[in-house]
Image (tube, rainbow, N blue to C red; front, side, top):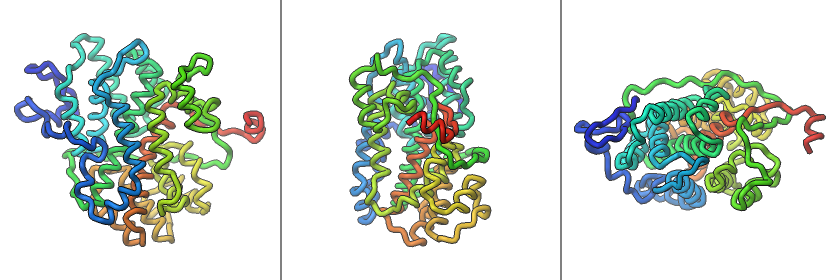
Length: 399
C-alpha cells in the first residue's frame, strides 16, 4: 500500500483509502464518530454483550483516554517531540491497513485527510518513507525490528521520546484493531476484508526457560536526576520497582502515554471478571509465541500449570501440533491465534468455539481483550529492548 501525492490538495494519501475521484476518503463521516475507540460498535450489542461491555467500562475508558493522548488535534513540536498530528495519523492508518480492519482504516483515513502533509523536501520524504516502512514492519512482524531499525529512526531525526511515542501508537492501533474485530464478531457483525491481503508467518520458535528474565532498553532512558515531576509521578504509579526498571524508565519519555497504557493494562488484567488467571496466561502465551516475544511468553508460562502444554506452545501453536485435551483451553488458543494472525477475517464464526466450550459473553470478551492487549505489549517489549536470562547469583545481586 504505497503513498501517493495528490496534486489537487498537496496531501499524501494511502492508496487504498483515497476515493475514485481523489477528493475525499472513502467514509469522511468516520472522522466524526463519538466513540473513537470502539467506533460505535456498542450500538450493535445485544443485552448479554452490552452487560459485558458495561462491566468492562474501565478498559474502554482507559483505551479511549489512550487514543486521545496519542492522537491529539494539536501537538507542541520541539526538538525532542517531532511527531506531528499528520505523522501520528499516517502511522495509525498504516497499521490499520496492515491489520485489514476496514472500519479502522476508514476512521484514520478520514482523520488524516484534512491535515496538511509535510513539505516536499527530500529530507521530509525520506523521513516519511522511513517511519512508514518501520510502522508496517512492526505491525506485521515485531521480530523484524532490530537495533539497526531503531538507529534508522534516529538517523531521520526521531528522538528517543519520539520513538517511544511512535512505538506506543503502533502498539495501540494493533490492540485497537483486534478489540474492534473481536467485539464486532461478538456483536454478530460481518468482517469487511481488504482485498489482496498477504499471509503473515509466525515468528520463529522461542526458547522457554525457567530462569528469571531481564529486559534492557535499546535506547536511552529517563534519568531520575533530570526527570520531570510528571515522569516521576507516572513511574511511581506504574510499578513498585519502576524507578529501577529499564522498561518503565524508557516509556516514561512519554509520561501521558505510559499513564494511559497502565490504565488499559491494569484494567484488562484485573481479577473478578470470570476468566481464570490460567486462561489469561494461556492467551498471553499463545499471542506472545506468534509475535516472538520471549519476555511476555516466559513471564506467564508458570501460571499455566501444564508443562507439556507450555512446552508445546513454545515450540509451535499450529492446530494439530499442540495436543489440548481441555476444550476450553483448546478454544482459547484457537480464538486468540486467529485474532492475532488474521483480525481482518475474524467473524462471528471465529468466536463460536468459546461459546461451544461453555464460556459466556463476558468471558469471551476477556479472551479477546487479553489477546488484543498483548498485540500492544509484545510490540513494546520485543522491539524497544533486549531480553536476557538472569542467573540465580545475578538475581540476588539485583535484588
